[in-house]
Amino acid sequence: MYDVTIIGAGVTGCAIARELSRYELKILVIDKAGDVCEGTSKANSGIAHAGFDALPGTLKAKMNIRGSRMLEQMAEDLDIPYRKNGAMVVSFEGKERLEELYERGVSNGVKNLRIITGDEAGMLEPNLSNNVTYALVADDSAIICPFELNLAMAENAAENGAEFMFDTEIKKIEKTQNGYLLNGSIETSTLINAAGVFADVIHNMVCEDKIKITARRGEYHLLDKEAGEIVSRTIFQTPTKMGKGILVTPTVHGNLIAGPTASDSDDKDDVSTTQGAMNDIKEKAKLSVPGIPFNKVITGFTGLRATPDGGDFIIQYSAEGFIDAAGIESPGLTSAPAIGEYVKDLYVSKNDPKEKENFISKRKGITRFAGLSMDEQNELIRKDGNYGKIVCRCENVTEGEIREAISRPLGARTLDGIKRRTRAGMGRCQAGFCTPRTMEILEEMTGIPAEEIRKR
Image 1 (cartoon, one colour):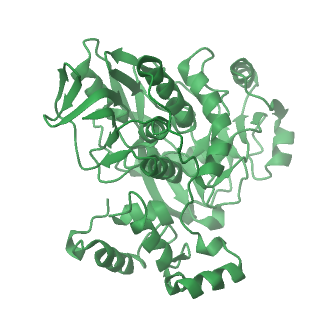
Image 2 (cartoon, helix red, strand yellow):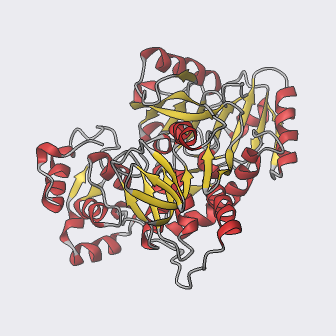
């Protein structure tokens, strides 16, 4: 019997778990995938949005602003990369749409916003198109690693007692006298729905008033680190009803991303990539930054946004003992810390749990051997020779880091699990070189036979 069960181990579910783990509660996080961060949270732009796009007065705006202000401190506490690089929304015509975004941002409480001319924008970003006429600059926009944020919150929640159950799809929910019964075997007093694109499925099992979540596909190009400095800021085009349009942004690890496209799909598992979308990204991204070297693309990927019919986040008690955190599309990554806090406050207001005296608020990330000084590297190798063995040449990831990733709380059990924790396999050769040795280490440490090791 659990006090709280959270369905979904993405960034929203893990943010909620971390906040609730501040209390003397028996918490369970369930996901149908085999690891945290296997859905929407792993495939997005990695941007901490400043908050000028969301409509004033919406939950989306409120969570965006609060989350943006929480992320820098959270990144420090959880030992993950975060960089306030700023953003620029470019226009190729007049500035009316930019003025509208400016007013929206001011109304939402965004600071450090300004509209500049195309010439001024070109001075800030020399590789911008000469066709840019005006730009809205948001100095407080930032970039963050989406899977490291997700993993860090999950690990921290686990350190504080939250349990995780993977490879478990919720197919049946029954109301009981004391709460809910899941799949006929898991009892919980309170059920929290953070199931991403499947949140409508979970909601509709419990609630009479039905909701619909549409999977909105967004395809991306990821470019090699050789292209990572073509822009320093996140470059947006003026948004449309389908989203923020094709953007170009550096990542915290030095790559460059271009995308996403936007097309609605009836298939909530479809993360295939298409040649047509990739051509579309190239064509539209070059409108903003003509010199993008698309011959340096190292991979393409697709993310799914959980788009609600009503257009706003759904965060509320939707039934007795049942809290929705549904329809969390962009800026969901930015909003996650605030959503965790908001859901925690909802729960506490009705249940009055006892706060822990020994809550662990900080977490130490995996050693980044390549980021250490020479003296620090030598000292670490003296303690553990595995840190002197490079496994992933593209990203300079050592065997010591891979072993850490497997032995940590919620340790990696798949190749993608190791990739998201260490970046082994995320570089130029896309795991072509390091996969065999990574599999050997996984087999040795976990006992999983090599032929049973999965990519994800």
